[in-house]
Length: 187
Image (cartoon, rainbow, N blue to C red; front, side, top):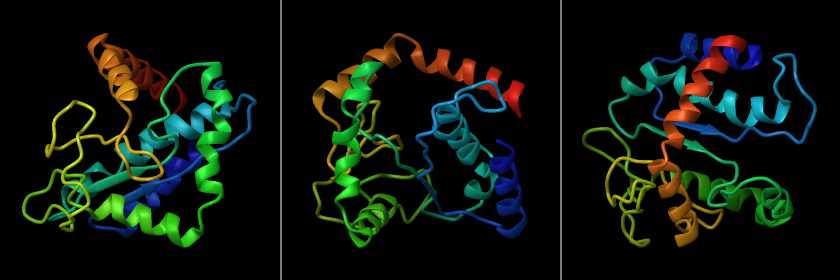
């Protein structure tokens, strides 16, 4: 987490605005880190939260196209052993994709009007690729979080239903409360 805090400090020192932020960190290390939390959890969750949250003032100062693209297991939500059993099917598309294609997809996700941002005015490059995406809250063409797979297609009906149930059950508030508590402890 110290490295994340230092990276955020350097970004704030060198930049006045941020339009696009790509977060693609991950690890396969399974032991606990210095914080007493499994290293994979620190890297794939807490570090992402900090990398999104710390530069918010710089993103708010951007005049348009304020976006964060975080890549890990889009549309592969689920719990426990099921995630481990599907690990190969998640990693396989990225392992067989060329760097150029992966880059093109990330630029599309970050700049397309299909994934609306929160800025005024210019809100992405116009596209004919299927219109606006539906955000996890079920709204189309609104500001939101968009669960998409490596192919850029929306999450399946099952994933949307799972995310809706979790939202309705108050999981968001519970996770955020835990996150704030742990970040207060480890940073």
